[in-house]
Length: 249
Image: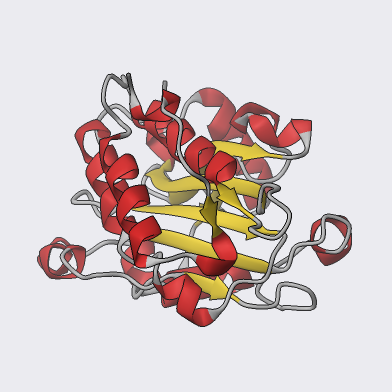
């Protein structure tokens, strides 16, 4: 039986332990078995986290939304994603080698959040320059908190890749999402869906592309609890590495 079909004791996000971290890490590390693309694996990852991270007090799912992003060069996107990226870029020139933060997988309580194809604003976010990335607070802080630099994400330096790729990354963590300048769409998303905290896991692939899993949580998460998620980034990386040349389903 593949990992995504097995039954697990749900993880209590407010009391996430070393044991939970170990169990979850093992699942994520092996979750790509039998998959045919990174998109397949990404969908399994977000589904496992969405289904199994719970509010220990109520037993309900702790996540409102879980998403998986990966940077991708514009020229390697399909026609639909290229068109979407151009519409977001506006008057900014779009070059073949421009990095875009592409949505690979998504799952959430709103029906529109359960397919990357129905995403309205995040299918492929263009990152034409460091300045452009700095103008998006969430992306800027996400990259910084993961231990990377915006310049490395926009234009990876092959000479530095090996060293940086081996690092253990931090988590992207916002303890109080309401009113945070790091989390956009306060009126449309954070407040109506009761988002309390945000956690992000990610890292660097050998190609220089980054991957990020972002969890929008309806329960508050402590800094100590967030730190237990750090090792999961490596487990996710191990799961998606075999599919670096076969990204989209």
